[in-house]
Structure formats: structure tokens, C-alpha cells
Image: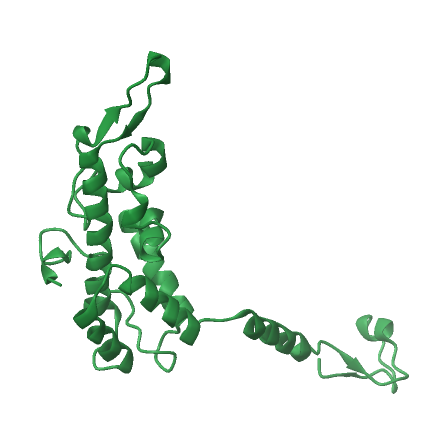
Length: 216
């Protein structure tokens, strides 16, 4: 896998430059917060379609010749400017579908468009993979070492699987959320009173010997 597709080596700036570096949850940022920062930067640079690509919800195999252009419009919008996709939209990516009734003719993706969008998806994943390694991970950390090893066997879904693995290792699951919620509720001891105390009198500052607010 070549570094040539990484933004930052050219005149284009890399949106991941300056991102907080992740080294595991013993570091200065936990995974959910780091992932949120990563996704915010991707959305700013490439749009929400970039996250769909990283998470595997949009793959090369999903792009077909003859697809209605509306279905791939977010990706077409993302490659209108010169970006890390390294392909720029051209008119020959779209054609009018042949039909007997001119009113039934739709604008669909041409074979050229199909190939270009497939290439764009592949290059986006590769480019973000390299940018995360370069800018997003703490150098010499275990996370960075493991991530670097992935380059030796890089395939089209490597980044997707890495994100899923990090979610599993460092993310927050439902049981943890439930546990944290119960713990916080238990910690909310707003007011404690002895049996004979009157909460109303305490609130009205009408203190008596029996009316004691404890732990407030």
C-alpha cells in the first residue's frame, strides 16, 4: 500500500492533522471521544458519506452500472471537489437511460461512473487508514504498533474491521451504560433526615432539634 494517496503529501491539507492522538483508554482520550472527533473531522472534510465508507455501509460492491444517480448522489457530491478520493466528477459518469417513453428516462450511472466511484471508495479507505496511522495514534503505543502491522495484510475492509475491534475493546456497551446510570442515581443522596424530621420545615428553614438535614 503506497503513501501516495495520503492527503498532506500534496497541496491538499489533511483534516486529520492535529487530531488528538489515541493510545488506548489509559491515555489522555478514551475511544468513544476519539472516534467522535475522528468522525467529526471526516464529516467536515468528506461528508457523512465518508463515515458510511469507513463503517462498511457503503462498499465498492454496492456501486453498479445503471444505478439511479439519486442513490449515489451523496458520494457524487463528495467527489465534486478534489479530495482524498483522488477522482473528480465528470459528466460522462452519468447517462440517460434508454426508454420508449422519454418521460420514463432516468439519469443513471455509466460504466465509467461505476469504475470511478469504486476507485473513489477504495482510495478514501486507504487514505484515511494512512492518515490515522500518521496523525491519529500515539507513536510507540501498543495501538500504533498493532495498527502498523495491519499494513502488511491490508485489504479493502481493514479499517472497518479495526474500528469494530476498537469498539469492542474500548467502547461502551449497554450493560456498562446501565451500570453507570445506576451508580449515578445511587450517588444522588440529595437529602437525608432523621425519622422525626419534617422535610417541609427544613425547606422553610424552621429548624428544630429533630429537624436535621444530613448529607445535603
